[in-house]
Length: 466
Ligand code: UGA
Image: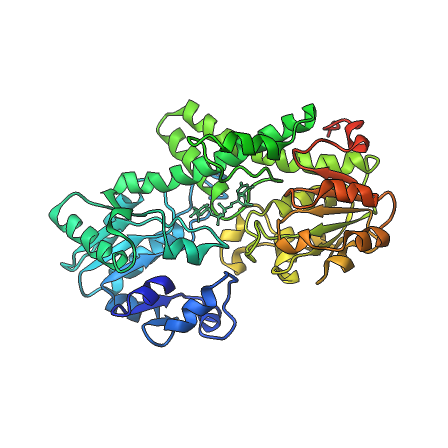
């Protein structure tokens, strides 16, 4: 919305939220999320044509176009639990729009939703329409965190789905005119509603599938002495495959990939497509395998136990350049290490101690609900300590796990880290950011995902029985 305000000075944009604290933060000098370049964009238009308000109903009533970007968590109970998207928040937003509207509106699905959601929303909006015309559009977002501003300023494509009626086409044109302020016309794609809804799920599923593919290869590389980075480079040189999104890692995280695939799996199952559902399920299963494989490497290398040992965790965000921790691989890795009774000291340049403690105490899938609906298990964090410096985290540690590819981890003084650690000193790089040879020269026992194994690690079973 900030980018629309920046590029369209003739349009007034009001961002509304029922969470007053969040709106206050958006109106303050310290925005509630960290995203490179976002501060500048917000500051350039806040108070000009970009406003943040908790007066939801007033601004929705006054709007011509309403973008709905509410959370769509994975259901944790009832039909489809653990897979299906929970549309509670969407439904209440739609009911509120219907109740407060006094003029025709275009309602835009910005949240990622299951295919055919627009049909349900249409029914809710028109259930007691007082002669008001609502047009539903699907306008999925493709930005990635950490590069959001760049992605929004120069999107590969903007996708708009609408009804194939004269009113539907008119609504599509109205939204197209907003993006046409800065996006070349050929990059604004229009299509029917269901294609647009599925395209979003398909794009995320295929991106995640690439990561699971290279992560599956990383296990084979470790078993055979190949180097996954070399393999990815060779494969990515094929112009049909391309070089992006082929970095092996400790596993993908983020608010979308797992959630969207589980949702896709559920939709396939509902349509009787068992084989298709199983195919996509495997992408998530390989991701879970990659995370538990990493934990097993750590435990088996360190004499089959980390009980009572200090392990430094460098990086907790799900990727670099964001403070977001939703579904980060670090949560599962820390749980695995805590399960073996390790003491964990975490350092992340952007994530607060409070957030890390909450993440480790929360039940799976609860992150997408408001805070008061997140039951906590305080015992989960007893052995965890969060510090504000990588040297502090690693001091006296037996092992170091790198779980986010922050640039600053490439430039650390590893000799200093080594000198401060217990011996043998272990380092487990889940992001391939360190120089393996240099660290081995210093004296570390090194594991780097998908790279030829250290003789120390090689002689151990890859996956001890759990
Ligand atoms: C992803 C998509 O890339 C966006 O296009 C989409 O709009 C967004 O989800 C969404 O649906 O909201 P995001 O989750 O912000 O964006 O971040 P990604 O850059 O896709 O990274 C996701 C995860 O995959 C991260 O944990 C990252 O470290 C991991 N990853 C990525 C790898 O392990 N290897 C790679 O080569 C690339």
